Length: 161
Image (cartoon, rainbow, N blue to C red; front, top):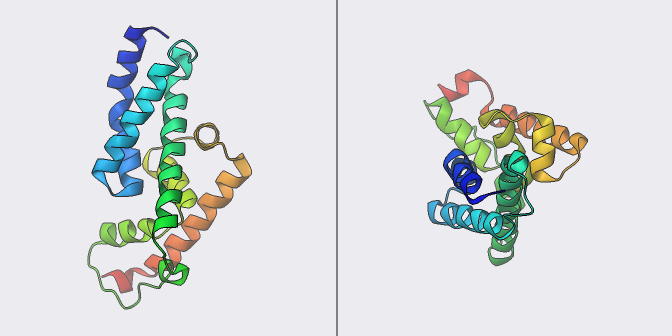
């Protein structure tokens, strides 16, 4: 990969990477740090990464850096696992987007990441496998479980409205 191709990759993928990480972490400063680290890693491996595979490399690297950050944070903060899956029956929202956003934030890290890649970013299962390093079966299971949880969390439209 040349410096010119690197610069094109920055222009082409920086916004998408940032949006993906920000939607998962909800922390703009950390998302910016992860994106900067990702492009730094690419710069260090400039001659090893093919220009044709740069998108996959960037998303894979950003994903793994994000997962490392999430795992590090889990060690620092004790969270009651039961609180992550509380029903929203007592909460009354009039905005479905708000309810969906809250439900997505309650998903476990891997499920949230694959749902964001599939449903928000529009990646194929094969691309998600390349980015996450999971098997295709695992990706499909995580997406299925996440969608089941989201459906149960949102419930019927009467509860939302």
